[in-house]
Length: 131
Image (tube, rainbow, N blue to C red):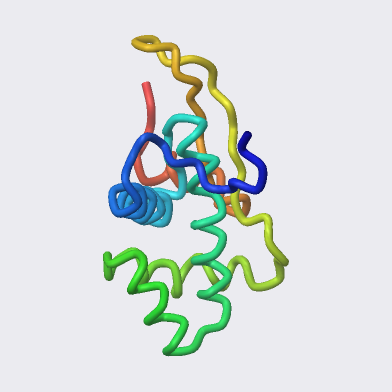
């Protein structure tokens, strides 16, 4: 039985799982959207929302706590300077998971995880016109 077992282990050791989730959250901060398996997206959501909630405190101690978990300085800077101001009026629910269907190679369920308040047209403007 799996009563009261909240954390999905993802077939990894604790250190490997923590590093994986931290790297994926850094990618989410940098790119605003990450395509991954559904299980990883569900495991990543509470971690990403916790980092944004810590960022909303806007104190040096909060920045150090986020830095200790995420490690990538550029991601921490972007979190505090760009993402936190957009989420100040929101009380949780910062991310959404969009299911995509099975992966072609092994039929793993795939999903996008993205910030709820991310601008829609920003990616198109940066990448330029499409053919």
